[in-house]
Amino acid sequence: MNTIIKLIREKTLQVFSVLILVYLMLPLAVIILLSFNKPKGRQNTSWNEFSLDAWTNICRDQTICRSFFTSVEIGLLVTIISTIIGAMISFALIRHKYKGRGATSLFVFLPLATPEVILGASLLALFLNIFIPLGFWTILLAQITFTISFVVVVVNARLAGMDPRLEQAAMDLYATPFQTFRLVTFPLALPGILAAALLSFSLSFDDFIVTNFNSGRVVTFPIYIWGAAQRGIPPQVNVIASLMFLGSLALVAVASLISKSRKVKV
Image (cartoon, rainbow, N blue to C red; front, side, top):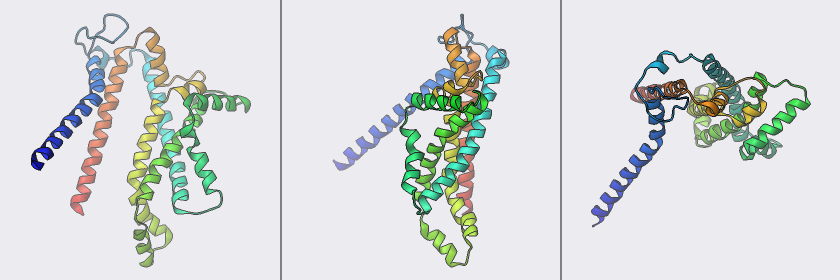
């Protein structure tokens, strides 16, 4: 009887796992499918006929590619700055005790609890009052404001799960603090830092609300899509989304292969 119940539980879990996977992958499948569509009108929301026009003319509308590369440029800068600052804050919060540590933690996590509309409007008021012209740099500063918090959360979780005895063992073997950090702490924290960097880039590239408040005349990819939705989204948007999805899968596959090769060597 227990064997039957266990079998039913396993099969039920498998069915639910497949359903969840289908639920998550279905929107992506629709995006990829519609990238090969030749719509009748402006709206690329229903299948008409197969075509490679969108794939062969991705930059037919120069605004699409210009907004895409603007988002990529901002995303990379935000990722680099947020990851460096966020990782340093995480090490300070987890590994050191100092006066004002609680206040630091509160201010770091405050953007997570603040609605994006309020955050975007507050930053807009700040930039206008200190006479910073809206544009590329205000988008960059605004996105760094909230992405740092996510980096700190991810890296904190990684550092909190690390065994401090490994670092103590390195010091017992006469390793200097810098050597301990370089050879023990940093390699162990690196997966969490990389995960935080990927999350930071995704949040930056995908952000619309905060960016829209502080963009001025700069058009990022989400802002372009929002504007295009008013008159009709071209299939080239689906092509770019498909390429980004496939690129993400390639990165995950490469990371998995590297991780497996390291385990085999060990």
